[in-house]
Length: 235
Image (cartoon, rainbow, N blue to C red):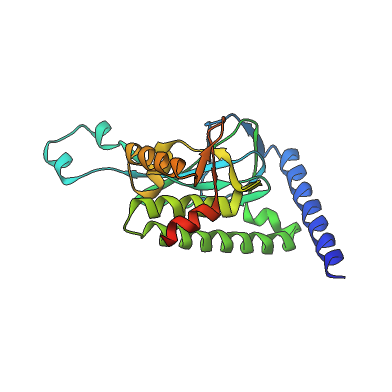
């Protein structure tokens, strides 16, 4: 009886999602983005990833006292330091939060990423979907806490493996003894996420590859062997 109820609930959710996407298209609230194209997202709107994937990054002003002392030009002071925050996959929502010290930017991570957007008040016709959004955003917040916990580890290799594990737990696709991320990530993006450099990430990824813990596919997507990672952590 329970599986039938779950199937009915999933069907209802899918139907509501499509209704909202149709509404957004009717009201010219959707757009398709190319890979790496910035999505002009702003606070107080809800964004729905109908297909494709979105990459979220934070940008903070990288201004040090030394820079101020040598009177750098304002254009140079406006240089931004970018940190990878995570993905939002298909049929998932996201929102943008802006603080004075940083900004969150959204980019299409793959071609043909279809985004729709609406205001919270637009959901008055779908009260059940509004509650589902609250639950999704609550879950995303819990994942961010896990992310912060992983980044608190002292060793870079531990931060790296924890980061990859968290990504694969959420987005991974099983392929024999490996679990593979459906999206590619550069070593620079990984470094920005774990507080390290591209050079260090490249060196550590090479080490993990030689140990058989990870493999990188032809499209540069990363796969991890959880069993070998567990064995390595126990040594």
